[in-house]
Picture (cartoon, rainbow, N blue to C red):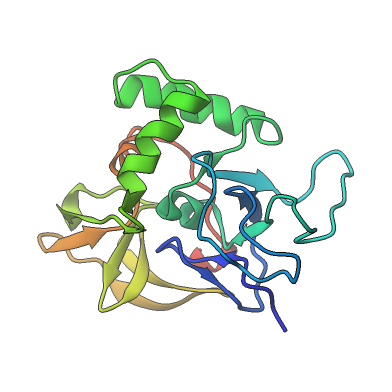
Length: 201
C-alpha cells in the first residue's frame, strides 16, 4: 500500500505508486503509524535530491521529518516548495539570485519562505490567482476543471503520478487559475531552468 507522501501540484498529499524525481519536506507530518496527521508543520518547504552523499533513510521514521516526493521540480514549485540549500546548493543559489533580480528584494531562505508561505496558502487551502495564458512561462502550472496542467511550450500537459499523459494545445488569450506562486512564476519568466519529467518531452 503506497504511503500518503506524494505531492500533487495542488500541494495535496496523496497515496499513489509513483515516486518522482525529487524528494523534500515540510516538517513532521505523520504519526508513529506513518499516517499523515497535518499538511505541513514548518514554513520551510523544500525540494531535495533523492540521492545525496550516499545517505539512506527509512521513510517516515517516528518523530522525524516526513519524506515527500514530487514528479519533478515544476510540480514541487507549483505546490510551493523551493530548492534545498544543502543538497541542491547550485539550484538554490540560482533560485536565490533570480529571486533578488525578479522579486526585487534581498533573499535568504527565511525571507523567501515567508513570501512563499503567503503565496501558497489561503488559510489552509491552496491559493490560486488569475492570469492570462500568454503571460505564463514554461514550467508554470494551471488548474482547469479540477486537473493540474503544466504549461510547456505550445501545449498544456496533464499531471499524473507517473508522468504527463493528456496534452492540449495551449490557449493564448484565455484567463486561467495559476497554481505556481507568483514569485516563482517571476523566476521562471526570468529564465530559471526548471526540471520537468521526461514525459513532458
